[in-house]
Amino acid sequence: MVEKGAVIIRRSRRYRRAIVALGVMILILAGMVRMFFLTKEEEPIMVFAPAIIMNEGCEEMETNPLKRCEDDKITRAVTEYYARLAKNEDYVEEYADLDVYIKNGKYEGTYVIYARYEMKVKDIYTSVPGLGTLYLKRNEKEVVSINSQVGEAKLKNFIQEVTQHEDVQELFQTVQEAYAEAVASDAMLAEAVKDLESAAKGKDEP
Image 1 (cartoon, helix red, strand yellow):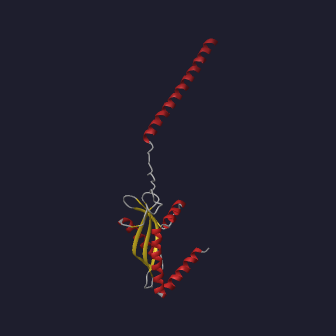
Image 2 (tube, rainbow, N blue to C red):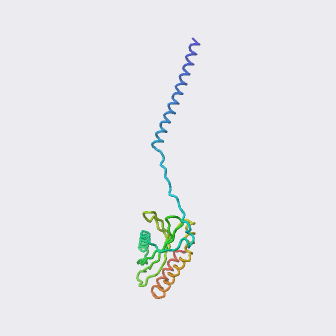
Image 3 (cartoon, rainbow, N blue to C red):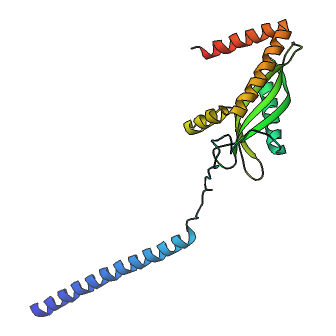
């Protein structure tokens, strides 16, 4: 009886081990099936970022000369930028007679913009010649962004570098002379400009 019982116990243990092994295999298979369906249903989508292409020769005046902008979309974007700017400034009536000049930016699809304008101060007859510097990004369809400031140090250095080009400095000199002539011709404008400069200086001080 003892031997028969021992045989039964051994068989019972083998059956339990077989059942456990079978259960483990079923779990593994179930996991594999689940992984298969998850992989099939949740297959990752490959997203390729557009390559950043440098504009060759953009740092040299000879290969990146200042040009009058002939791109209507860019000109319109600059015009709209200054229209918004005038609405947000208390002392400016409008920025008129915009003349847009352009240099290639550091990367493909980017540009450094030099916008010459006549700023009409409220209640002052004579307008003030000025020149703004902007950084613009665009794709094939539209202008993506236009800003008067950039945060990236490399871009700041690049803009400063191309602004020192002789052709840009000549444009600045022309506008500076027109500015000085306008201020000298109108005492009320001279007083208004002085007040504006004092106000701007006060904002910069802590």
